Amino acid sequence: MTSSPKKLHILITGATSGIGYQLAKDYLLAGHEVYAVGRDDEALAELKDLGATPVDLDLMDRDKVIEAFEKISQVDLAICGAGMCEYLDMPNFDSSAFMKVMSVNMGTLSHAIEGVLPQLIASKGRLVGIGSASAYVPFARAEAYGSSKAAIHYLMKTLQISLAPHEVSVSLVVPGFVETAMTKQNDFPMPFLQTPEQASRAIRNGIENGDEVIEFPKKLTLPLKALGTLPDMVWQQVSKKMNKK
Image 1 (cartoon, helix red, strand yellow):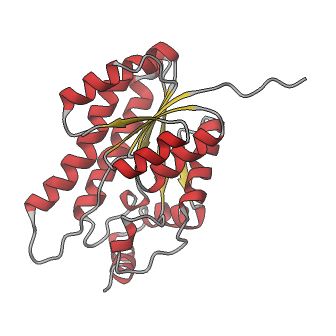
Image 2 (image 1 turned 120 degrees about the horizontal axis):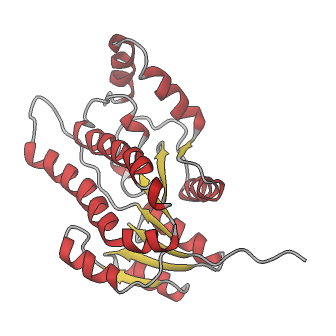
Image 3 (image 1 turned 90 degrees about the horizontal axis):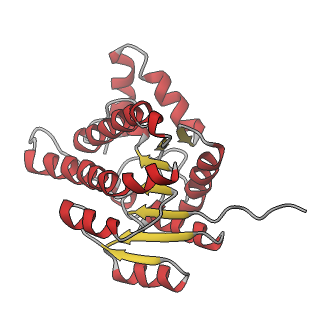
């Protein structure tokens, strides 16, 4: 007789859109307890109907994040997926747009980590952060987005080391292009575009396997990693072609 899978208490930020929404649905359908953090009332209501505990929260407000997460007694898995993307068009470098992307993508993540870390230490759980394959090589117009994701890569890989003594596992998710509201603004080719369902499956499988880095699709991430090791002239030409309007 086989035992049923352990029921996990899962906190997901960015749960009201894109990859986070799909992950929340899939984990709920699998019988897990899900705390869905987001700002979209309609999406939160839909997830509540599926059994989630909705958490309507501005992740940029540190004090409110700490207060809200203190009310959650147990978290075995925290997936931090909130974020945004805004492109820069040269020769005008919009510093306000740059700092907005950096602030949102790093701020929501850092606040969430601070808020949920005590529960993860108590449960010896897993922390998951969403990076991007764009961090592997520089792409024109993605100065802000790529920089924020490169920072997330560094942070998550550092936490893999610093949280190990506390028995908290850390995974970095590195997705390619995923069909979401965020990528609908892209006016350039998106090779190997994934559906949210494909993205959710890859992430859930990686978490179940205990992978420290969860990359997908390999057809995109592996070549980009290889390009990052080549001379600047090579990847600069590739970047120009991929981001050409």
